[in-house]
Structure formats: C-alpha cells, structure tokens
Image (cartoon, rainbow, N blue to C red):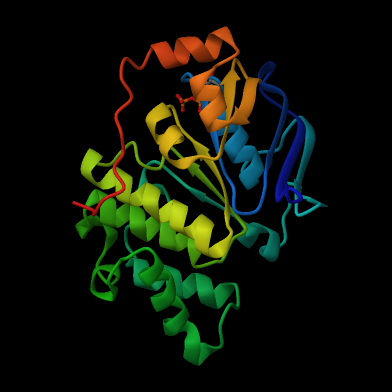
Length: 257
Ligand SMILES: Nc1ncnc2c1ncn2[C@@H]1O[C@H](COP(=O)(O)OP(=O)(O)OP(=O)(O)O)[C@@H](O)[C@H]1O
C-alpha cells in the first residue's frame, strides 16, 4: 500500500472539559476514500474539523504527506485540505455566483496567470458537470444538486490533495445523491485525490468507500476494508449500526436522473 496522504495519530479533542474525541488514529492513502461512520454525537464532524484546521486538537498529530499540519496553516497547506459540507450554503457565498467565487480563489491562490483564470475555472466546472451558465447565477437559484456540485467545485478548483466531505449528500434528493457519489469516485480515480467521507449512511459507505472507520463515543472501534467490516462486523456496536438499517438501499451506477 502507498504511503499515507493523511496520517492522524492520537487525536484528542475536548469541548471545555468534555473529551469528545480520544486517541483516534486514522489514515487516508492517495486515491483512497475512507468513510467515518458512527451515531450522531460520536465525534465524526469534530475529527473532520480538526483535520481541516478549523479547531485545535488537545493532543495528537495530523500529517499530510509526512508534514505536520497545525492549526496555523500556510496558504498552500490550507489549499491542500478542503472541506465540503452537508449544506452547500456553508461553502458558497450566497451573494456571489460560483463563477466569481471560483475565480477569486484561483486568483488568491495564484493558481493560474491572469489570462488563464477563466480557463482554470471552466476546467473545474466541467469536472463537476456544472455549466458555465449555471455557475454564473447566484447559488440561491440553483437546485440542491447543482449547488452541491458548485460547492464541490469550490473545493476541487484548488486542486487539494484531500477532501473532507461531511454528510455531503444527506441534504439532497435520493435521485441526485448517486451522481454526487460518482463524482467523488471519478475525482479519486482520475486525480488521485484522497477523501475522508463523514456519514451515517452505510449504503453510501458501501457504494463509495474503500475503507471504513467506525466511531463510538469518540473512539475508533473498527477499521478495515468496507467489504469486510460491513459483511463481518467484529464489534457489537458496528453490528448494531448495521441492524439499525433494515435494508440498505442500493445506489445505481446508471445515468443521473
Ligand atoms: N462547538 C461545540 N461545543 C461543545 N460541544 C460540541 C461542539 N460541537 C460538538 N459538540 C459535542 O461534541 C460531540 C461530538 O459532536 P460531533 O458533531 O463531532 O458528532 P457527530 O458524530 O458529527 O454527530 P452528527 O452525526 O450528529 O453530526 C457531541 O456530543 C456534540 O454535542
């Protein structure tokens, strides 16, 4: 297996004196999609926010490509780890079109010479299958799926090495969920991006992820290839999580509806 892209060791996060993440180790290899599952309140989002640099852990190490990441990150380090939220409005400025948001990011991060900024933005939009016409309207006029595509382009335009996606499809209609998941898979396959996908949806994890970590009360209780963990969960908690889903819906690999 290739050297990890992300390596987290001994992560501990407390809110006040309440420890909500304890001794968490996790890794994501380049081109790997790792799922982080667990009940509500088990600490999934907190881990994602710590890795993205939005909060300071109380203990532990976060390394990207072998280099330690602290909360005080350089522009390049911030660019390398991008987060996509359940609610695309958190990623997009409602007063700015996605087109302008993306252009501004390319400019600030100096990713293309002035005359090639539009080209760079067009490329990112085409990867998420969003037309320039749609990208030029305010996010409020887009459908939920289009808005999430714009939010993903906001992350991918920066050519990050790792994307953390927190419940990226739970606000979307079932009909568009699978198309967003296929988009993540193609970014993994074509660009070798690593993903940490936070979800409570085991069907999504089975469809998309290569490996899964199961979190209970802030601790990792199971970690392994998705097929193994979901077929033969070793931990009673994982079995309970699976039992709580009477029948996993199946995402199709067909055309978007
Ligand atoms: N800013 C905060 N201040 C205090 N406590 C918090 C804060 N954010 C989260 N918590 C608490 O920390 C614990 C872990 O929350 P977290 O959001 O990481 O869990 P989660 O697994 O992502 O849950 P969900 O699936 O509901 O989003 C919860 O008990 C939550 O109430």
